[in-house]
Picture 1: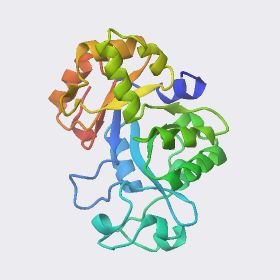
Picture 2: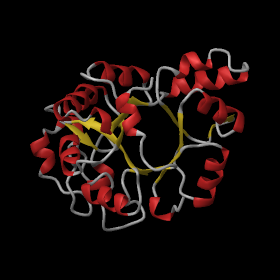
Picture 3: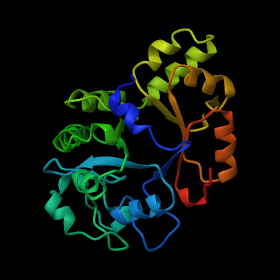
Picture 4: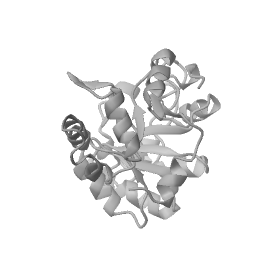
Length: 252
């Protein structure tokens, strides 16, 4: 599914180092998915930032993992039940605010974001922001839900990079068992696979699977890898990127 936007998105130093929710989860003074966490990740060599997208009650796309504020602000409030103005009045545990996608793209004009659309309402809100800022070459749209991913992509005015859903990864794995029958037909629908080493007994970190994906032009990113030795072994197997909570530990 290669296009000019996806080529620009992946045109960074390799291996790609994607900071999972920024760089904060080992710290007690920085909130995850905050502007401060993103700044910290970039300072420590991240090539991309991975974040999740939800939508507020008034359809503003925000970068946030959970659907409520219980874990990070100790408040039993749903993101989808608050307007962005109301959400902006709330401080997270370490004092940060939940940023909108618009704010982050404007604050970091060269930032490349890996976006996981977490909720149905996030599809339209995410696409609207990308279109408004003409940020198509700075984002990758993904989702565990193929339907959410496709809905978001269809709302974009120009194509952008995208990665496989869970069901599409399973399709690739099954095809690989069948000596690659249909593998390229599935792979042409996205630019990257972003995967764990395994789904239960299903191994995705085999040289055969990785090399077949690479031959089809796919980027191969593994998550969530916090051990530099493990990351280096995956790169040696052919992976092109690592998603990590601890990008500060990696020296590729």
